[in-house]
Length: 181
Image (cartoon, rainbow, N blue to C red; front, side):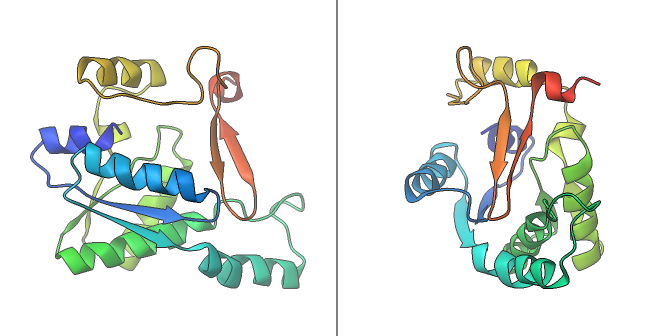
């Protein structure tokens, strides 16, 4: 919701990709597609990558009987497939730039950017969370308010204080005190 208007303000034509990793239902998927149009994306593409995650990561993980640090599955394997499919869309559009909305925590920024550079050397990577001065959820909410962007966030007052990302293997949480060492 923030990245589309932010990039447009800086002169970019924005094309969005949503990679469904198996963590959303049909209603949420339709909302994401509608939201991209409402925010002014030039085009939107939804790609279903649940089966590739299963084939490329889940099955080999189970067959090998290995867990990350001996405790849990390879939690963010979907990031690499998201990048791969996003770059395919970049190729179709003939673009030389790839933007991602990974937050300021850093890990996903590294996964997305290194994946992009490995798969498409020379591509320009735009990381709004790192490049702008809105590096907190509170500042982003203020930006949205001043720009008339409606936000339906699960961690508004009275809701969950956490961001939740789900795929076929797990749900990860971040937010508030989880990020305070």
